[in-house]
Amino acid sequence: MPGNCIWAKVGHAIGLGTLIWALAHLLANETVVHVMLFEEFSLWAAVDLGSLCRCDRIAEIRYSVPGDSRDVLALGAGAIAWLVFAFFGHPRLLGVSPLEA
Image (cartoon, rainbow, N blue to C red; front, side, top):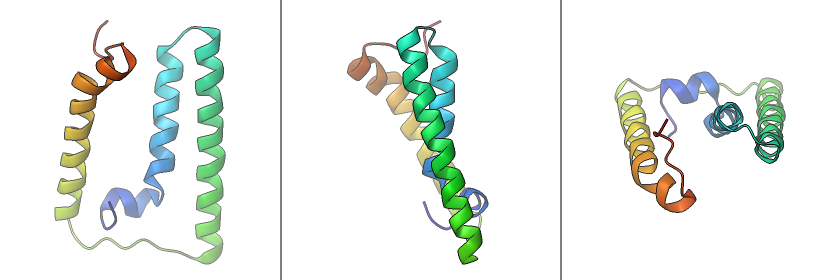
C-alpha cells in the first residue's frame, strides 16, 4: 500500500515479504525438496530486492510518507489477511495448518 512508513523505508515490500516468507518456510520444512524449493525462492527474492533497491538509488527515487493513518491501515489489513489465510486458507488449500505444533 503506497504512502506508509513501511513502503517508504523498504520501497519494495513485496520483495521483502517474499524473502521473509521463503526464509520462514525454509526454517519450518526439513525435507530436501522443501529446502531446495524455498532456498531458490529466498535466493531469487534477495537478488531481486537488491536489484530493485540499486535501481532506486541510481534513479534517486525517494518514497514520501504522507501520514500515520496509512500505517495503521496497512498493518491492520496485513494482520487481517494473515489471520484469515493462516486459519482458513492454508489448511484448506495446502492441507497443513501453520498453527499446529
